Image (cartoon, rainbow, N blue to C red; front, top):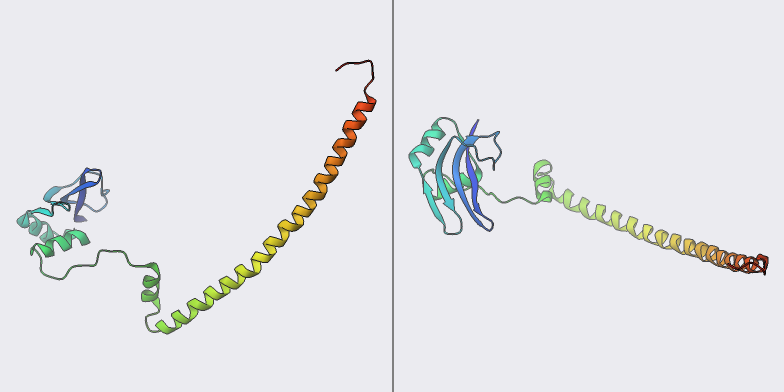
Length: 167
């Protein structure tokens, strides 16, 4: 399947695009294309389109990317309205895809889910605080025991070492 889409060229922070006819399976930045049918520079708004070649490839069944379609509508190569290219929010997509007939239910269900999450967080917070306190107490007791054991050992080492030997 053929597609007419943009191929980015140009330096970093200086984009310019070739409008190319390529196979849909080819990667967008692959550089392999069937024919170059135009050029677009978004910084200077310069556009160069080969209208007859674009019409030819459309007659052969080539599909247009949304951005190229909008460019062709803007240049009056095609008639129609522009396509919204920007990404939609995820929540809006989920709500629009499945539950269009009951928008009030989704609004009511969302706060309940959020309040349940908040309750769980508030329940978990004291539990997590209590555990470290208990662990700290255990650690303090074990440290004090280990300190006393260390001092006992050092005293016993001094008393056990023979007086005649030098270390």
